[in-house]
Length: 337
Ligand SMILES: [Zn+2]
Image (cartoon, rainbow, N blue to C red):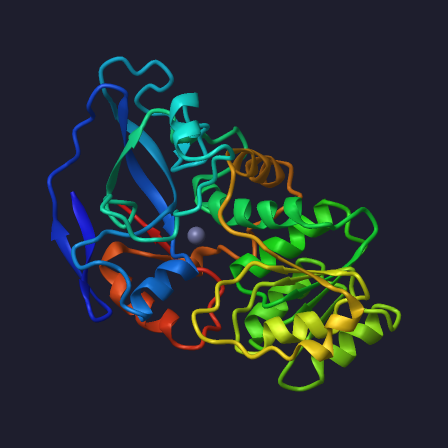
């Protein structure tokens, strides 16, 4: 099988690797679509990915081989590459509340920038009728948004701000809306992403390079500030912006991972007793909820993933080079085969 193998120094090489063979209790998934995650971009940009690793954790595909003793799957089943409920013994070994927390981080494991991925039979989940394989590849990032909204204090009728309309921000705004947010304001400087936020029903989209985003969002939320702010931008000042704009006793959800030191000035917000909650990874139920939101159209991938998103594995080097620049792209997706 072909795979994009990381060589260090932001370089990939397309190599031929041995096809995986399933041991008892394992399956092989032939990958159809693998979305390029911001975490992969960071792993490459900051050269954290080990030399020889094969990344790619947002994927869908088809079961092509089943190992001895596998009863759950047959060849031809359509699956998402993750989200399964671990067996109780494994779940308890990994802590009382199992969380897919290392999805984005490089491991020894060969993942979906290869044509085939070896999985334990409990790991994949079935793609329901009515969800395309391309949409299903976005199940993991959608589950990240579901996780953030579910662990937040957001309640029916709340006013919400989403900072950053990259894939996670666009999913977060849709999930918050599905969970009952009455108004969603988005901050995004890149025109294509701002337009996508508008198309997906943002009540207002603010360009932070053109107006004072804190002032504007506070004004739009009746002068009080949003109840909950989802920080999905990971730009230098956005966490501070979030803390400054949120309502008294409101909550800031830190969703994006900022890899550089961030300056915060507590007197600007601590008197309002705001809460700061980090969100990281996903739980199995978040994936199931994400698939259901996609299936029922409450979350749409339409402006996020389009024909323009797809690229063949050979073009992965160029895609990462583009994504390491300040990004105006919506979502790039490797299409195998
Ligand atoms: Zn991801």
